[in-house]
Structures are given as structure tokens and as C-alpha cells.
Image 1 (cartoon, rainbow, N blue to C red):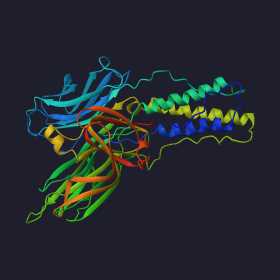
Image 2: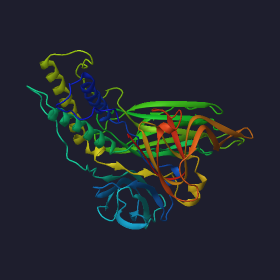
Image 3: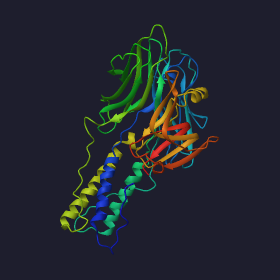
Image 4: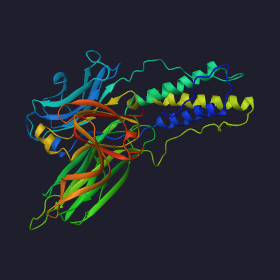
Length: 462
């Protein structure tokens, strides 16, 4: 959190530096009230399409916060039968029929304490259809409760008393706390994920893409290592419609995609997003195995129509004086900025009144969870100051990335980062809080990856 002044008193000279800290806070809060978000991670090909039988559809965790009352999950289904169950701590909490659009709500208002990690599983029951598809679009808890009431902002007119200035200061503190109450959740990235050696279409990634504020573009970063297949390209679908088809790539090379695709669905809603690989031809004779895909991010961005950031008042002089009317005008302008931040938070409950669950790696059983440990990993670009993780043998890696080679072929589960640190014990499950500044070079904006068996992770502003 940016530095804020100490409480104002009647025994001090009102300094431009202290008022400047309030102005800086208003600028920070205005920017923080807009948030780029990653898609809700749902599935890879291995965890969305199944033959008949019951299986794990989704698993993850959430950290309980005082005031939470409901755990929610929603999604879509096709050719589905039976029900979808939600289990919390291994116990059945609720279930719903696997209809074309389904949702689940479980009461979590009692039985939990502040900071508890709640393991969540969504599983199918009574699935008898071999061609059934089920997609999870989101899992989250609500509401987000604050321990104190919003202080509101004062109106400055004939004077700027300590009481009025302290009210403005309290509002800055409250808004910082309100914004950081909704953590950033690392998403499940894919590192050198094999595609297919057959002429077929496979899902590389599917999830739910929410849209808030003026976010008008879907941002996707993908790298392809195209080893054998002479006919292969990627496609992106939003809400069932193809919005991007890449060019067919020759075998043996690489391709990089930094896609910005238009989003038009209603603000505040979530729709399916799917990234898939289409293979139209395979090599003859067959030599190497499938191409590899690295997916770093699938999320939203406001690029064509930027976020409507506020224009702050002029800076307060740190040495000198300004007219009374000017000071009043600038203080009221700060108050207006803070009021607009509060209104922006209240106006987007789909973003600010929900805490999304952390999705564990794409795996339907423990065998897959172990086998795919280095292929599906929690990853994000640092934005906050503090990271909370829960799991066994969890580590953090950042810096330069190097793949190993095996007999001339890229080995997708053998790579290293230039920097790494262990976070939790390797023999027992534990919760650990770390501050990013203790890791040299892991500056804001730098990407980091979490290794090990990570049950939960969330990043906080402070």
C-alpha cells in the first residue's frame, strides 16, 4: 500500500506533502478499482470430455473469510446425464442436475474460521452418456464482508478541519482494504503440453471468461513447438463461436501468438472460452510425438477502449502556499475520486463481491496429478506484495526458463528456472505466507510459477 499521512491534528501546520499523499492515494485507488482478470480455469482436454462413469470434474480450494455465506459454482453441459455434486472437505454439500446450464450453491456461513482452507471438488454422479461434456465456468465464494462501515467522504467548503481530513484519510484506508480483500488468484498455465499425433481436434484449454468495465478484448499468449505434424493450427472459440483461426504451421518450427480478440458479451457475465489445436495431417512415416503448446495467459484487457481513468487535481506544492479556494477545490476533487472508486466497486459485484477459488492442476485422479506436475502449473505476473500458499512441497520459480533435451526431442516435463525458493514442507501440508520483496528479481510484473502439490494460492496487495 502506498504511504499515507498520519492522522491530522490541530497542532500542526497543514503540509502540501501530507495532502499530496492523499492525492497519490486517490490516483492509486482509481487505478486499482479496474482489474484485468484471468479466465476461470476449467479444463484441459483430459478433464472435460469423458466416457460414461463418474469422475472428478474440478477441484481446488478457497480461503474462508469472515462474512462468507455461499460457495458457488456454475457451468454448462451437453449430452449430459446424472448430477454434478459439490463436496467440501470431502463431504457432499449440494448437487444439481447436469442440465445445459447448471449452478450450485452451498451454505458456508457456519462451521469455518477465518483463514481456513476449504478443499472443494465437483464430481459427476450417475453419468451414463459416453459422449457427455461438462464445462465449469466458475467457482467462487460470496459475499466479501468488511469489518467496518464505509466512512464516506467529507465536503470541504469554508474550512479543512482535522476531522474532515481524517475522514478523507479513513476512506483511503478503507478502500485499500476493500480492494485487497479480493485477491489475485494464480491461474493454471501449461508448459510444453503435448497436443496429438492424430488428425483430430483437441481442447488445449477451456474456461469461463468474465468481462468487467471496458474490457473489450480477450488476451491470449501461446507458444507452439511444432515438431512432426505437417498440418496443424490453433483456434479460439468464445461462447461457442470461432473468433480466431490461425494459419497452418509447417512441421519442425515454432510459432508465437499474442492474440487480442474482441469481446462483446454483456458486462458482468461469463461465457465459455476454448483454445484448441486442429491437426489435419500427420507425418508419414511417423517419427516424433506430438507438438508442444505453452499457454501463459487467457484473460481480458481494455485496450481498444481504455479504462476511463480519472483526471486528478493539480499537485499540492510541498514548499509554498496556495489560495484557500484552490485547496478546497483540490480536496473536494480527491473526495470525488474516492466516491467514484466506491461506486465502481459497488457497481461490479461480479468482480468485487466474489472471491474466486483456486483451481488445482488439471487432473482427474492422483495418478494424473503426479504425472502432470510440471505440465500444468499455477502461474501469474506479480502484482501484489504478499503471497499465501497451501500445499505440500510448494516452491516458487521465476527468471529465465530453460528446457532440457532428450535424444534430440524436447522433453516437456524437464525444465528449470534460473531462480527458485522452497515455500512449504515436502512431507506435510502446510500454509505459508511470504512477501515477494524477499525474492531478488521478482519485481512487480515479473512472472512466477508455483511447483509442487499446491492446493491453494492467492496474491494480495499487502
